[in-house]
Length: 219
Length: 219
Image (spheres, rainbow over the protein chains, first blue to last red):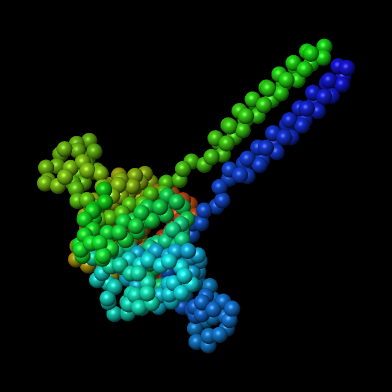
């Protein structure tokens, strides 16, 4: 009888131990957070044809003299923007880059909600694409309360932030030394979501006068 | 005998269970990574006296008419820069803000290694503080290969990144709508460390001609 009990106790111990290890392993796997997107792109970007980004089904349809099918910092930036599945919020100092404008119009035509905040003064400079956005039906609001609304950020689906030193111009992409951060880290994304909402509400032309954004200083 | 064994088995089970819970708890506490610094500052910043940042021992020493002892986005930015304990690497498009210059000189006098990269054209504009840095003995290198070296980032001790849309000017701090990200996330910090080292080496005046930075396009 005593031997039988010893066998039972040892057996129970082995089962309990293996179950504990299994439980621990499963818990650890569930607790390990998925890797958050954090990426940095540097510019200037190599000059290349962007047609394969917009027409992936027929990548050889373009016969321009630029290199084709090349992956650059700029193609990566375009892909991040085009990854939007529900919304795209833009807050831009200047916007004259035609490929970036094409990407925004492409999303808008695919029923993605697009909202654009621009610096009032820079929205009307030569080459600005803001007129093309408005013509297509996209809601664009001017920010005129500051000397410059100098942000250059995009929020993709409200959870992916694209921001940095890069203005959305051709010169910035091809000629300047610039950076763009792409992140889904909530502690970086959420403040930008808040800032966009604040500026969007403060610059609603139907609700406010031209200089209604009173709380301009952050402390 | 059988009752005794039952008591022993139940007792052993209770001990094994409590030990497992204890072990699991300790493991989870050790596995939980420390919270990485991720913070966003927005500008314009409230205009206030900065004396308490530089002279914390005598915060009431200044009698200027500005509000005193106020914590703003700008005081927070200054504190992040002044937190350097070994090195400060700056890569700046324009640098005319006198408080930021004072912070850099303050660190340099306290034997912090300071390296500065600036845009060649903008380093000599009216109000630029680059001359004051050079005069103090800080090593400053011009970047002249691009239309603009448009970065505006700082690396504190090689592990804390400060970057965003904010140029280091008074107008940007007090008059513009701007953002600054402060992060210690390695996947964001390390690419900037690499970019700084690349630009620093490529613009060494003793090694290279004025336009030696050949690999200018990123792909």
